[in-house]
Length: 309
Ligand SMILES: C[C@@](CO)(OP(=O)(O)O)[C@H](O)COP(=O)(O)OP(=O)(O)OC[C@H]1O[C@@H](n2ccc(N)nc2=O)[C@H](O)[C@@H]1O
Ligand SMILES: Nc1ncnc2c1ncn2[C@@H]1O[C@H](COP(=O)(O)OP(=O)(O)O)[C@@H](O)[C@H]1O
Image (cartoon, rainbow, N blue to C red; front, side, top):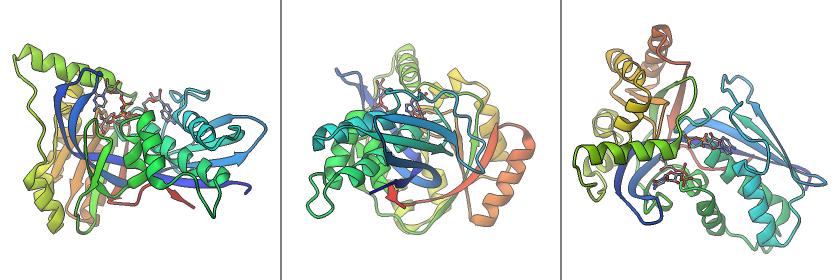
């Protein structure tokens, strides 16, 4: 095999309920993931050793300066894991074309890791009697990051534990989104820590996270308005403390008629739900004109997880 290219989607969290801090430093979650049509592309080509390049995808405005190009890149770590499991050398050149905002709360790094797991398994594993199943790749992915298994699975899914234990959710139809990206990222650990700090300051105990019945009903019926009303993110207040300008972005989206508005995961990307594809185009145009975002992109979901092209 000469080259394998995998396309992998970004995610938005429809519900992110953050429970107590565990002894291992993670929080127990209910994390309802939704894969959207904003994709990174990862190509793996046999080479003499491990090499990695990162560039902005064609037609995208994503800045890639913060992305490591050494062994610390999650895609490089994924390649090494697959090679170790299969007993081969990680001799591969990985090329990442990014359209998912970096450190934006849309799990771009996790997406690249998932794509590299799949691409390298396709390069090195036996096509007839594979040693690594999709479940094995998801387990390897969970070791790289809590969001990596979902990037392999895609669709809409409920994550519990630290977000890595997944059950597909029943969802009907397609939802139309507008994403407002921000200049600079937010650190995921810093946002979780701020969430804990805010709770401590208010003398609040972290509640045990439960799946929202309203959200599940909205997904099952494909009711966009009900979905918009059921969106929730326990990390949003923390993200707003760390990046106060996001309040203005969220308000601008609500004023422009979004039927749901929230920070995506740990932020700073803001997600707005539209009634339909035309409404999404209108909403995107208004938001772009308001000057409250670095860039405004449209996407729909759910879409499949990491897929070999
Ligand atoms: C917040 C979420 C929402 O989907 O993603 P982003 O919005 O950043 O993409 C995830 O929980 C992030 O998942 P991921 O980015 O894979 O995080 P990991 O590498 O597993 O963990 C990074 C750090 O985040 C914190 N963390 C992560 C997951 C979790 N359940 N509890 C945590 O407290 C811990 O401080 C951990 O050391
Ligand atoms: N392939 C990758 N793409 C993006 N970031 C990566 C990658 N590999 C490692 N990272 C690191 O992970 C951090 C979080 O990136 P990302 O996954 O894009 O954001 P988020 O966790 O907010 O969704 C980045 O700041 C970067 O240092």
